[in-house]
Length: 206
Image (tube, rainbow, N blue to C red; front, side, top):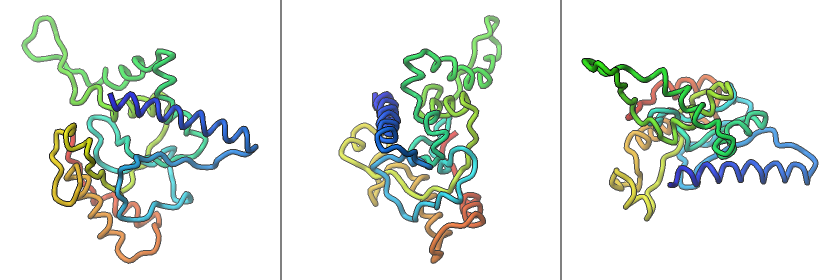
């Protein structure tokens, strides 16, 4: 489905970036991956504020970690964008099981000890979480600064109806509005403001 297409698109992004670097004779310092159907309500933080290996907005984790936007140093971009390669070299299943296995719990009262499946076991967010864990990458959570807009496709495919204001997920829109209020009239982000705004975010998923 669309998740597999996104995984392939990330791999194409990585290969084309590597080709461009080889042609131009220099290397990017940072990489930002983002969906093109997001509406931004506050400016993106400057690169000097990025901590950890990957910075990812809060919320919309769906059993794993938000896969709609990420900012990272060039050194770890290959790991973040490596999903397609992991599928081809057959390490994807091992990475997923390493994340899911600790979450499996024996079902009570069953002599054969069947296991209860965790929520969203095969979501794209879970797949991203597995890749980040596989490569040992640390994650910094940012406040939500954008929200997913409704499109003609999402009107029919999403389990959520397109709500007034053209947004798809209520908690994502709510968090983006909270970030806008928190950001206020400040001209740019600072580390204290980032941490303060992130602390006010809420999650609507397990």
